[in-house]
Image (tube, rainbow, N blue to C red; front, side):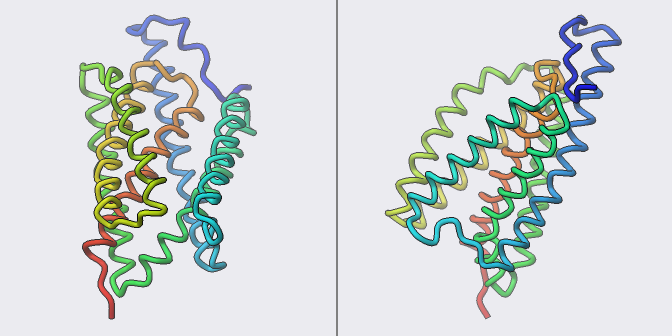
Length: 233
């Protein structure tokens, strides 16, 4: 049986069958999202223990390689989203993202209060997600119109992040992190509401989108906390 719930288009948005289907997609999305955190943590642990660094040589080449691998995962997950392989690829992707996170985690753990900073970033991300998911669920307003503006903002911070590979400006890094929190928090709102409104009928695709939102908010919060709250012995 296919994992994707494709039948929703058959029902009107107000029918009980449609509501049951949407609730099932949302519930499965949340379960898979929670599960995806396990390989992320495992990947980060493996990366820290092994000293993994994707950008040890040329940061720019490392960035290009990372983008190529990430988009390769996106393509493969989309092609297999209606099967168990899609779930397996999604979890493999979250492990890879955990590896990519390990360099930042290792740096933060170099602070005497590193563990506290990580837990604070996790708690802040959870609070933001809970808020956005609640608004997306109860609000009657359609937030999908924000999408094009958010995408433009994403392109801006992407270009700035690439430029900062060479510039290495703390102020620019801080600006990028703040904008990323705003943009990806708004993306959480849109992506959850798309499931709630029946616009996304496959929970693998929904999980991937929301996972990326959460990942980017977490890393941005952790970056800011490291800049302002890191303490050396």
